Length: 428
Length: 195
Image (cartoon, rainbow over the protein chains, first blue to last red):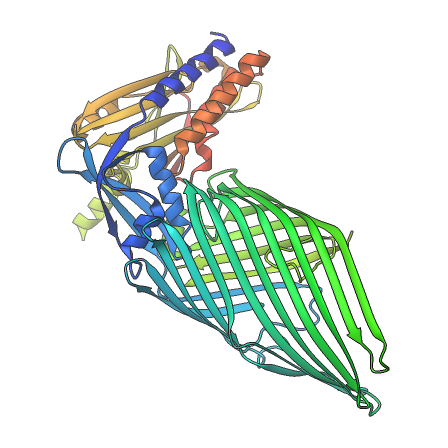
């Protein structure tokens, strides 16, 4: 038998095979081992409805959807006989994360001049509210006693509402409270004292509306109000600087998400495209010898933005991924200032800008399925990227650069630890 | 104590390997019976959803070329009809469907079945072969991937009509390349000699 005939035979078999795919009429959905998570949250996220028939493909997609919840570690489906022949009860067994959680991330880099122990450390607690709500409180402790520089103490309180209006709409609001931070930058040839305090309330809001299947329309916004003041005292001629910065970000975008896990995906894709508006208003005054210089600065980005990330399994334990992100749009900068001698300064600049990043990565699960089930996930990750990473923030600009990183990630029901090293290959 | 040791011995002793035979269509493998006693396997069968046994055979030709081939069994226990529905895709590209009632009959079918993992004549193969058996529970889009791959593979090959060095490799890829992406619940590996 020649090769073409064999391949045709297999093809025909596969078509026959496809036509025989079983379909199950689900009469009832039962959730098992959900811990603190409301059953309604899991059912609404699965997108499965009772008194409907589903193929195995649809059930597998539902497993992925549940696994994308950040507090779910693993999901298994099984069937039980229903009330009459041809009808089934779907039993959804989930392995949920604990109420108490932590996140520890530290990626070392030659760029860091300080000896920081952590880049990010959060400790939190979450609990169920009503039939489809989850509330969480988290604290990023002040770890200045451990390291010379780091994030200030932050307390976050968030509420996520799933299945809003019974339409599978997701809404989240998080309020962050950032503690004041005061630190001295230098003390050798004089002193520089600088304090920065953000508005006690820094809100973040998200609203996700399902379109169909794994497609969503998403709206995200955040606002941050920062006030800073500093005394730059060199040669007994101090300069007082006071500034206020109001930053507002809003993104409206379409998303198609088929990733098989929220934290450690190894299969599936994440496609996003939409509009991104970012605005930063700042007002600053400098005082030196009782002479005041002040200026207003308004900066606005209006961008079209798109990102695509795809994970491919290579073997049962290995996977690779690539990511591309592009943005293009208008950027306007408007500065008006008044010098102490009465001169008026203006700068009005409008231009078109773009950015892009390409990334390729590899992941290896260090533990097999049994060990993973017992102890959690342990994964080695390596990544190379080129371009600008502006993900989630326009105003933290990076130069075009090459970057290489590798890290070890451990996840269990208590949280995620990521320890790694970043190497910057330099600016392009 | 003696009874416990005897039980342990019997348990270990029962972990017999897969068995190879040669038939008209090529090299066949029979899978050991104790696989069906595995609690996790039985638990997965009870789920009423499709689970997969993936058989991979690694060997060399007499000329020293490394070869991979295999077979795939997809098994679902239909709760209402209380039957096992089995789809078999063998190393020579043959696809067959079987239906057996209850676990006892299924065990008999399992014991009496041998699956072609390589259609080549015995004379063309070296004697050593490694057999890997993976059990893949109901997992994401296994069959989707498989069908997409099958379709693409077939289209490409039919379109180009090019001959690869080995039909076996092509069939193996067709059978296996898609399911290799899924994490098995467990794997067994046996080093065997072709009889």
